[in-house]
Image 1 (cartoon, each protein chain N blue to C red):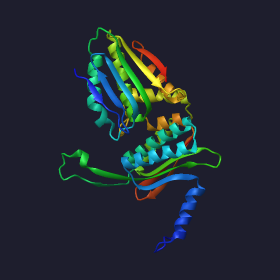
Image 2 (image 1 turned 30 degrees about the vertical axis):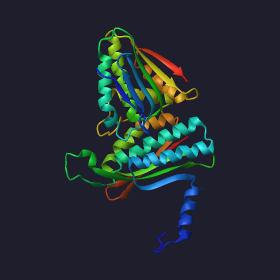
Image 3 (image 1 turned 180 degrees about the vertical axis):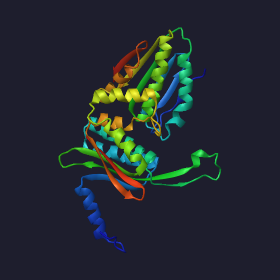
Image 4 (image 1 turned 180 degrees about the horizontal axis):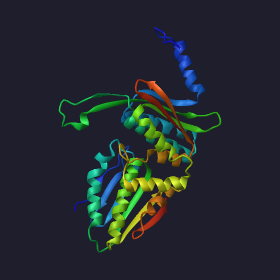
Length: 126
Length: 197
């Protein structure tokens, strides 16, 4: 499994997978012109990584300022993969970062956390 | 009003005044693509920064703008297109949908985002059903519905995640409306949607 490093662009977030440190990060804004084209390949790799057997904790960090509804589908698919991996015995934590006054982003995090029971979830204000 | 046969500053001034009287700050009517979404979206954000619009409002307005313009791009029944010479080159297939976008502020200070486009008359019932199914739902209910739809996957005929209207309704705290002008054009109904913030 290889690392992924996609830098942020105007309408797409930075997407990083650090295999050694077991860290996945999605940060910035997400409203791609073509959601599938941007996400399909890297997310299938990330899901494959999450689903592997891990000895130590895996962290999935979401630090999004804005995402559109097509991107929400990608986040849901990730949550499903994360929860299923945690159910399978892995220790996985989702960190949902939001700007201090952004109640909407906080609530969206709370919504996605409803999908997680075996995986850990933490809301982090910044 | 009949279009004048030569340039008339007076008529454009009248056109501009009509937009201003409706509180419209940004308007676009014509063929749309994702670059137009980016361009108007950036200018809209800049304008709200200059105006000192509350962050909470400006984020919601921008979100509704993106969802609504993407709806027009995906679902406007009025399009022009050019197929690529090589049918393998799917990305080269240019499709230009026609639609109308307006963003502005009512005298009472409410912001609005409006989009309008033609839809096939055959699709109108389904669209009405979809919208009526989310009418009156509160923010929490809309959030739960959003999750359910995202989990279950897009409904048939959807070109996105199928949660665009739910997202807008949630951000607008249920303050949205729509209108349909039947038979606006041969085989088409004219669909208008507006969200208030």
